[in-house]
Image (cartoon, rainbow, N blue to C red):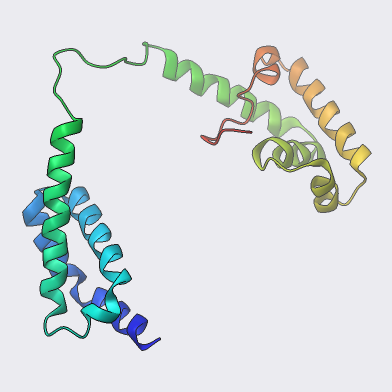
Length: 177
């Protein structure tokens, strides 16, 4: 337990200095933060041994250098400049997606609270009917009824037929299994 406290103290006190060192190596703030994080993860695994050494900071600096050189090697092998940009989002696609989400959001706001809660728990939280019933405080049959009525209301809302029947009603960046 003492080793963990020593590591925490080391990280708190030495991070600014080590981050500057990583920045000088990488030349980029974001990359420097990533390098330092990776180095500290590796050092943490061996902290019991490292902290007994005369100069643990020197060890961390060495790990930082090793991380930096391996990242440079990896980046050189995986990135290649091209004359042509990769596939771009067609003009207007972002605006259309934002407009569609706005229509869905406004329609959801018009639903009764229990229906909206049931939809959110089903499609956003990805919960099964028994869990939704327990949270809302009703039977599983009522959950199915609430969701069915909510989806009917959304389908009737102008311009939502394809959205409600499609996979993107509650697009959150997470994929539903």
